Amino acid sequence: MGWKLHFIEDLDKYRSEGKQIRPGDCWLAPWLIDCPDSWFATSLSPEYKRDWANKRAPLIIRLPCGSDWQPDAKFGDGHGGLKENGWMVTGEVPNITAMPSINADSHVKAWGYHGWLKNGELSDDIEGRTYEWVMPPLESEVLQFIDDFHQGNTVVIDEYTFLIDEVTEHADIIKNDNVLWSSTTGMGRWHYPAATIEDRKVIHNILKG
Image (tube, rainbow, N blue to C red; front, side, top):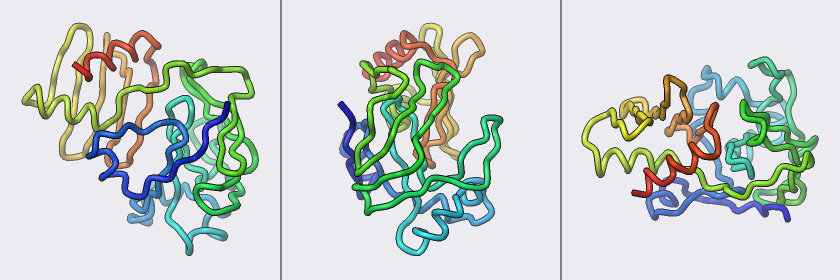
């Protein structure tokens, strides 16, 4: 079916209105280059620096698997490092094309994504994965949940421990000493390194009350 890109002009305002980020949503991330010596700034590809750095801030796109992808970054090398080059991005946001394909691996293979971004549309996963449950909890929901209903920085519900550092805006959800969900909310990123689909559903229901 594919997912058309939808450009969000003001991410903070979008979230403050209670809107959820969905696959295909994208936004500019000027904070990635605010600190030139940061890892995020050094991860930007030479293609981005050559073609787009003087035209727009780096872009972030929510993939069908729920991960956030940076088309302006260098390729990963599969071992936690980075290669020298990145995607070739053409077109104006949101009607962009990135070459070659996107291969967003995951510790839980079922939640990875391998597909194409062409003319502003993300393709179906070319390895046959489907995404029937694509709305995991967002960083803002974790922050709001703890702020509104549980005063303090640590909350334990059933088998799940919610940790948050309000200074660094880092949040974790832990079960049996395993980090299921980790988020650096200031960067607008989150990931599920170890959560099963059942964990995702339980956490989602907890956050929704």
